[in-house]
Image (cartoon, rainbow, N blue to C red):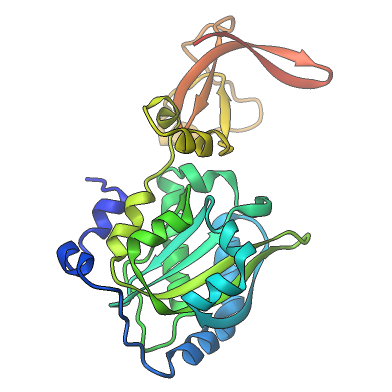
Length: 288
């Protein structure tokens, strides 16, 4: 049985909602934890960059900047705070008091598929999240069952996790090899880690057609998603696949004059016919 991120993370230990609503977040942090987190991030930055590069399939570096608390970060870095109010990648690293890594999608640093990852891509994100938990956190904070997903509003999801005002923040940036960078932030601890990913369900095209607020619809329509045109499909025995070689011919049950399918997230959206546009391939939509 397949479970959503929110379903899997609801099993994480957290305080009851009634307890949280009647009190202000208070983390009672160890006095040396900020310096320890900063040192761990700097020591693991190279490994974390490799993990991000492998999972996202783009060459990136994770640059560690400074340590502060959440209240000071909000005051000192208003531009970065605004960037984290939009879409981005959220990595949750449960440690008892969960840590969370936020990476803004500004400057097109993140690939489009992060916001609608299929099963294989979700596995890549989960493996990346676990490696980031090992690379960026000190030994006393052992991260287990880490998870990652692209979401539409990092700040809104973070607010669900209830961070204390004195929670430790490590400011970072995710930098592409050709120069563009996006702000990133590691925060520890969260009191309600399961609630964070209630806003991190995968983004599917169907949501564009569902009733939603004007702001939500506007955010969704700005997300770039991959589309593909399918010529034909069939099933082959493994032995037949192994025997494929130059000159082999595959037969499909579809007529060569039949329309092609335009798919989004593996679902047929429209059909059309192939045309030549200049020296490039195009698709003329014929029906929905």
